[in-house]
Image (cartoon, rainbow, N blue to C red; front, side):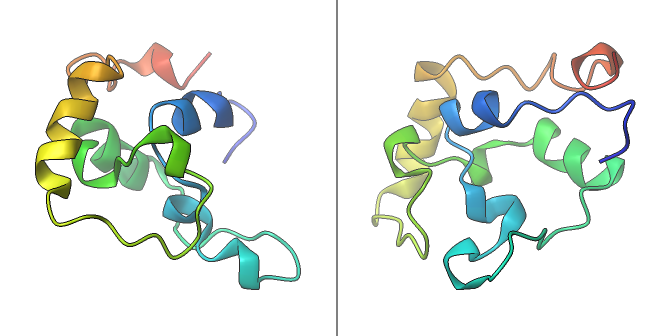
Length: 97
């Protein structure tokens, strides 16, 4: 990400966004790389609709995670439980400081 973009790994992990969501299978990489473009468009897509990328935070570091059958229900509950607010996550100041 560019220098003018503020990025905090911990807020993403604490909200249930896993390492492999952005980095891919880091357990198979000699050096951590990005698996996704990390462009503004890509980030905003997740900020607008984070639910498909959420998992329980305690599972954020699990590589090759297999979601349970009721993952849709779990993700809906995580949005509330983890205080995720997509309606404010696209404000410019969230990432540009």
